[in-house]
Image (cartoon, rainbow, N blue to C red; front, side, top):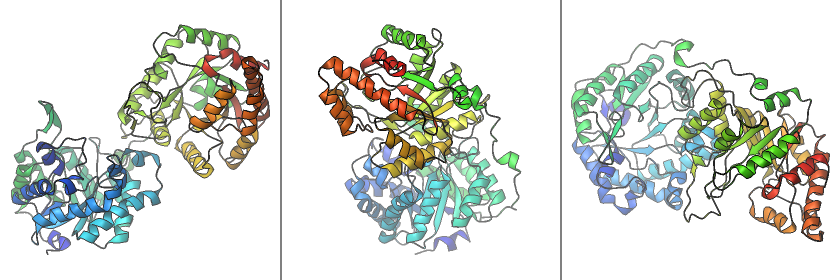
Length: 613
């Protein structure tokens, strides 16, 4: 069996192209698990490997790019991680024999880990280790860790692979047209961060075509003394008869393959859209060359990363931000109940009530139910021209991808809606649609990071925005969480990511809140306490047992149970809410409260605030 590193020292090595591209062309739909084909249709996978081998590839990558527990779990295959990875190696080896090399392909875990810190480094490492162990056991010749946007995730993958094997490792980040990773890292930052992990080959793959990738490779070569790799897409895809077709010709990729080698690349290949004819042309183009190294120079800081602009001062973002910054007035807000259609007449009447009572803000929530409702930003836009009371819009990560979230936040900024409560959101439920879907590109921690970058004049990929947004970033916290350690860790992560105020889940036990705030006393962030006047005993039981994150102590539920009649129950619910509000007003960090009246009963909210009922 040839040795990968020995070959690299003497000639340019050619990797294969887009396995997924050929599988897609052969009729495999993109909503299927391509990795499962290693078990379900091994002959099809081997057919793809054979086409690339015939084209002259020296290295065949296993069909295991997404064969980690998280991605396989989306298809109900999380129990087959080891089985699928080992089958992927066997399929590649069946074609490679003893003449070609088999590289174990390991891709990223998915969008959430890239941005959020929702998985601890040790958790990410364990997921990558599981995949790498299976591939090593089945006998790969090297590993290719590819298409990573997050340096944190790449470091976890490198640690995992190094822990189970001494085989060579190719580490490939993915960059955008601006020359930065999706996480905002420049090529020189990639080199500095990954140097301590000593990948045998460092490079770039996917996302961009040959020309912008050459720019990235040139910058990597200027600061990296080791071997380099480049595996671009075949340009940008276009839709032809409902299918995505990559338009770059084989001759075009061959021309850039020579340029990659001249820039110092030792391993070339292709990613999305690259077919056997592309690999054949690239092989022919680079065969006469041997890898060369460029002189290493240092890029000045100003050329390697975009610097944030001067942000909008917190107190100038909104009236709520100014009140919380001053800390002289107890802030009040009342939560609205959005209608199921688009008629806001009843909602407007409720806003008139709370504004006349001197309430500072109104909360516009987002519902997990799938019955169609106007989104909070739209409601806030409709209310703003009529009312002075300021909206706080709840923004849920559940239903948008990363690009959509950034666009929505820019829309809110454009209409002067700056108070945004960022929440992860619960899965859709209890609606009239039988199979509602959810999108979770990010969780709340990740979206706070994105919003904070927008406030610095940068989008998630590091692109410049001018002027910066002035989003007043709020987050949620649950003092009654059953997993308090996790809740506190996530609370700290949200503050570290850029949160500027926090709104709690409804509090029915002041002591519970005091203990929670005591454990987070080092966090200097204003707290708005959630207060919910219960409507009935049945209401209390439902909230306690069926609403995620809601905990109502047994003594409180017993008080509601003993109330003689509906009106008495409502009065008791208001009384309990007033008692809790009076207790928490003096707690450290508490700067206000927001009242969540049941069923749109804004009069009950005002009774809580005014001490009547």
